Amino acid sequence: MSLDTYCYPGTTTLRNKFNIQNEQELKATEARVAALALFVLEDEPLQGPMNESRLRATHGAIFSEIYEWAGNYREDTGRMTKGREAGYQVTYGDSEYVPGQMERIFRELESQDFLNQFGIDEFAERLTYFYSEIDSTHPFRDGNSRTLRKFTADLALAAGYALDWEPVGSTRQSRNSLYVARDYAFQRREYRRLRDIIRANLSPLQP
Image (cartoon, rainbow, N blue to C red; front, side, top):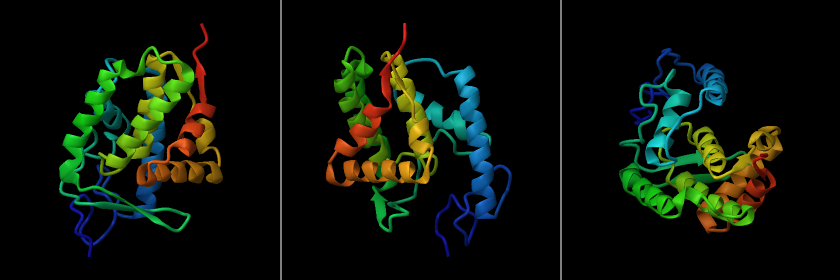
């Protein structure tokens, strides 16, 4: 029986505003709701500095139509484990450390002026590091990947670059390549694969 308080008792299905208790149906509904929210964010982007509040607001904007806890860091989850299609699992740290880790990450990001004034190669290097730091903390109960892609695209935009994640999600192979790159960065501190993906999809904004 599941002990995850985010889920319906005895299941792995997240409690949701639609009261959908079939996991596959919830995943399909969540995908539609999140895709629509991301589309709206293109026309009505969030405003303000690229700080910790902005990350939480991004998660809230994408998932508030389906989850009560959208925009809030995970609590009482302990360590979280995610399975990958390649056949291995990734374990993220205890939820009690999330607030402190996020404060540290964004204090460091702010100390680097939110990555403004970097040339494109150095920007890609620094963005890779911060992507990995947030990813490895896994601050939200669900929706971390979509939130992180949107947040880093906005961070790039604020620094004068376009970061297009669409090619990365275009095929199953490209999506799995991103997962592997993320996990190498998180587990082994080997950033090259993730950096190469980010750099390949990064370009200066056109005047």
